[in-house]
Length: 395
Ligand code: LCS
Image 1 (cartoon, rainbow, N blue to C red):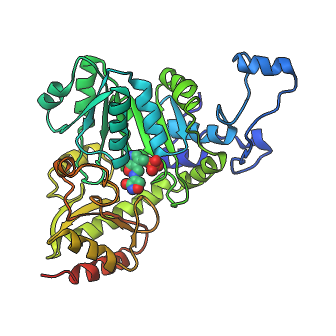
Image 2 (image 1 turned 120 degrees about the horizontal axis):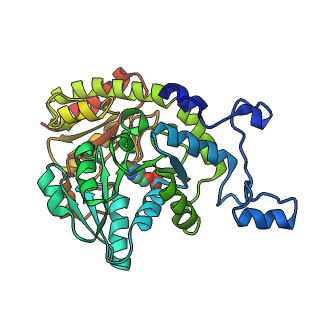
Image 3 (image 1 turned 30 degrees about the vertical axis):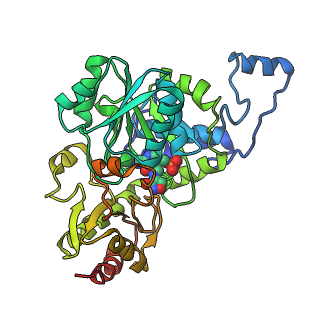
């Protein structure tokens, strides 16, 4: 096997041999829905799995394959599968791991649509779940039921930035042989690699830091070959949330600059957080790189850098929070994250609007909470814009 290179090299080279493709430096875009067979018998062999080769792009595509191989290496997994959205990746994995009557133990705090999916699974398929704080071992042990077939966590959690100790969760889950699924979207594989600390599946909304340019909706799951092969042949193939070859191609382009983009996102976020924390209109700030962040020590241990996302509460009301958004000029009001542009959103009425108010407050999503995805602009320009918007809030 070829020796693995450093992360910054693998994002550019892994999974692709240009000489298999006429020397094309960049992986070609195989924008085709189907593949021709030389003979009927060859078609039969491919369907029977007796002959290597592509059949139909829902079952596999060469451009998508380069992306999957690269992602597997970056997350240090055996295999990766690409999907048409982060939610397609989440739903394919959760439906693969559960059946009617099973139970999912979930971090208290997850992306709004993942919350919506869990509701749907409960109402339509009687697959239950509990959202619990993963802050101590006893709580996790007490949350595991006889029928728990999956632990599902985000870290950092969208949008509160709370962290889950992956080493602790993986250790407890191993005792009971329960697979741990980590949504690694907020970290990217550059900052944190959950499979290396004993977790079983990593999911990404590749829409975010992996793509990095705000022009793709996509998802990825990484894990062990045996299980991912089963997902490929069931909840990916038959539910059909596949990625388009063009989107896979865009993600390959985005991936090349992911480490340098993230270095800049993190550096900018640290600078913005330092200023934000001192502003008189800011009530609280949640940023894993802030030494006063309650889980600062865990962030230092678990993440290479604290990431590019900051949440904060303004003093005042929901209307004040909305006014702050309205007064931003350079910073764009938009959901999504991990793009070059700095984006600001109001989780209670946007990404987490589907979560009932009581549940939302338990997660820590107040009406005053604002989420900032720090972009790649000059940090001084981002701060100047945010500051003038904050300065205008009533005292
Ligand atoms: N997981 C996390 C942690 C997410 O933040 C998102 C999307 C998803 C999964 C789903 O990925 P998608 O299907 O959109 O690719 N998060 C969004 C957000 O915070 N704002 O807009 C989308």
